[in-house]
Length: 180
Image (cartoon, rainbow, N blue to C red; front, side):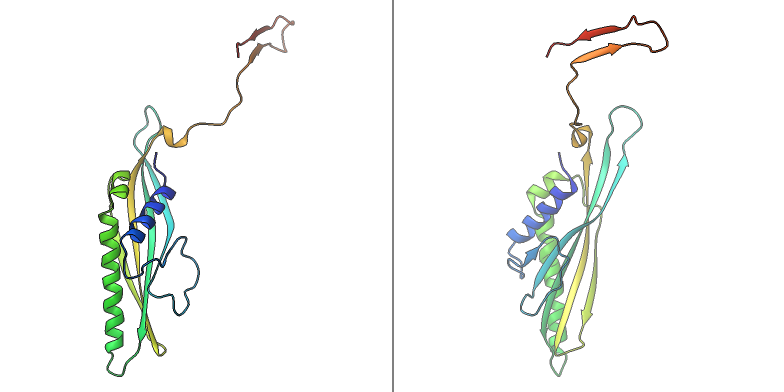
């Protein structure tokens, strides 16, 4: 039984164990601001989940796709000849590649999914101050199966007695005690 939260944890574990340039600076959920001295850093969060039914008959089954957003950020000092900007941009693309390799080569993750339908990346860059900051956002789609076992058990009370009576008829109801 696999859930989107399980997959987020497996992506986190894969990146952390890969010993990327970010080292142990890998966090989930990644929704807080980053401060100087924390770079390079990788932040993860589950941002989307979609289920598509596998049919109308029989038990409920889904092909599910969870989207994990990975934000990787690096920084470096600005230099007169823009070498600092090029170094930071190169470092963020190298970190992106390390993340992709870690995810694709993670056996626990790939055993829990059917497919990686998309892996979309977008670069962001800021050079407003003496420090260049570059980041890449990777949206990683993970396809997996969810069946009835993912939604069971349904909480219920044990059935101990059945009473059949009709309020519109004379009292001739049937009552059965069930063994416990």
